[in-house]
Image 1: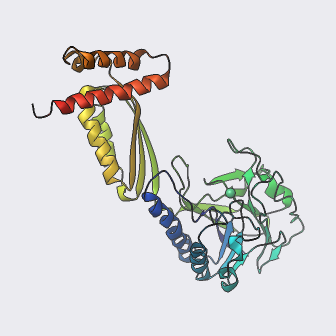
Image 2 (image 1 turned 135 degrees about the horizontal axis):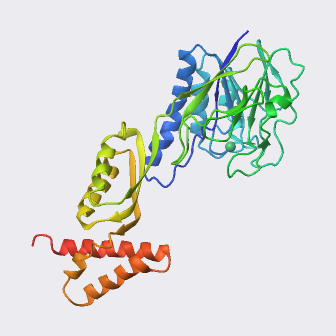
Length: 374
Ligand SMILES: [Mn+2]
């Protein structure tokens, strides 16, 4: 009998989303709203099993109203929900899992013991976490080899071999095969990622977070729809986008005069600016004739998008473009400009160059403003 379920994780409800000013509130709300989209995918496809593999909440101190809201949403799901606590919201005294809503939501099970749970057509092998950090493999207790039903593990941790990852709750890449599982659903890593076994079948995967949490997070904002036809069959996986916000990083190197024109037209091609957080990085050379356009780019980025920031700190004034300095009246301002230009071009380290570059731009802008209306 075919088993179908939704695998999701790392909702991190209550995430601070600091560093993006007042938009942080909208980012927090999106994480909550996108739960509806997750449940919508299940509804559209007639799926009545939802497996949540950890870090539903940012931490155990989040506002209890948020816990109530999440519990309420899940209680209205017309199917079964199984949740394992993750390292952000581990099962400790005073945790979010002590909230009354989890008792009230009769279709929702917060799993508190690493013990098999037998359902009609499959067996779950859950690995709830009870601490923030550990070097133990949370799946090591699972022995599903003798199971006649489809065996599904739920775990939270770092699959071995992740880039830049500490050995925190390490999960071997072949953990599913070792444990005799048909599929091991894993949380913690925010990107969708699959780990094919020697036979090519994917029995271990991260669904990734339902809603992207920050700039630079690849392939997040999805849920995973999993279908397993029978015990031993290769699971069929489909990553379905559900995220509402796009976190986009664009990087452009300005190499010639007028290069900002293509940056401006590129901004016009971004499809949903009202739901996009944009980080535009500019480097290369800035020509005097492009300074006004840079101001336009900055204005558009900061007003058109949900959130936008232009990082032009590493722009260098084009070296041949110093006629404005020569046009300054002879005196201390011009001498200063010449000294700063020297620093911007030839300082011994990059940080000094960057500081001088910014100073030169400021001096240039001050000079321009002084001449406005002339
Ligand atoms: Mn985690």
